[in-house]
Image (cartoon, rainbow, N blue to C red; front, side, top):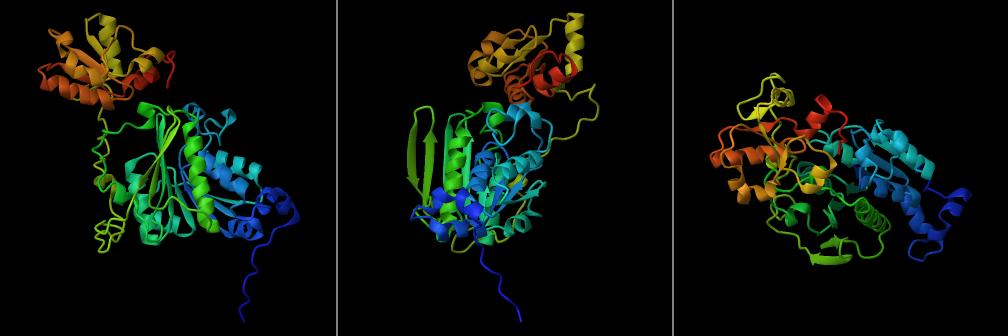
Length: 390
């Protein structure tokens, strides 16, 4: 004879902890017990994942999963509030787990130290009631969306960039999915990452708490979740806008006749291809130069022209001595300033923007333009570690 498991109950300590929930008619004892019995998976322990996980733990979600495989870096601390200065260098999962258990030891924290992929997503996501997407790249966003649709799991989505945030609930019953909003990913490199474009440190706190709120509402079955609604937050002007979304009957994933019925290669779908490994750090391709080669050229006083295509605020942080700043966006209109230049080494932060600049320059007739492999970050690592990294 199989005995049914007893429903979760609240201890006296939990009643005291959640008392401000329990006296709300929308929550009460029933709602808090639903939270205790529920499970939520946070994809990422970064800017969005930090407030999401912390507030869900404080709210009393019984089982909280986190997916991440990164380590804490100084640049994370401006916004990833689940981590502290002593955590720099630690795996984010370890730091996040310790913070969450300090907030609420009643919550069971599960860690998944994996890079989410088509091969493991269904297994990782399948054991949770609600998925919270705190990712920062398009391949993983499409992967999470498609996995949620296939599994029938609601996806509390959020994204951030500079001063703007977005939030919605995708893949809920009869609601739209991420592909209904964005059927195709943008061309690679068109949308800069937060590492390239920056993000207001407070912004993920706002968007992450919205995601956490939606997860709690979905679990308790109260209120009006952001299903079929897309919330846009402009922190600079302190404005919220709401766009209506409808499920696309022709959507390849959640439509009436879906063509995507299994997870695909999302790197390929988004046009992202791994960079080819460098054969020798001292000898670059025809359109590449290494920082060692640039340093030797400077020491020989060859008169090499160093073009920095970053933004002015980045140039203020650190710069290669003798470099000239022309931001990538201004370069097409300022090519005349480079007339007569011979050998030209072009750099940005890590090499992506400068690669675009080199193509533009070569197309315009500057045949000796070369991309500095690894950008100024590589210069700092290999040549001048006294410069600050960002």
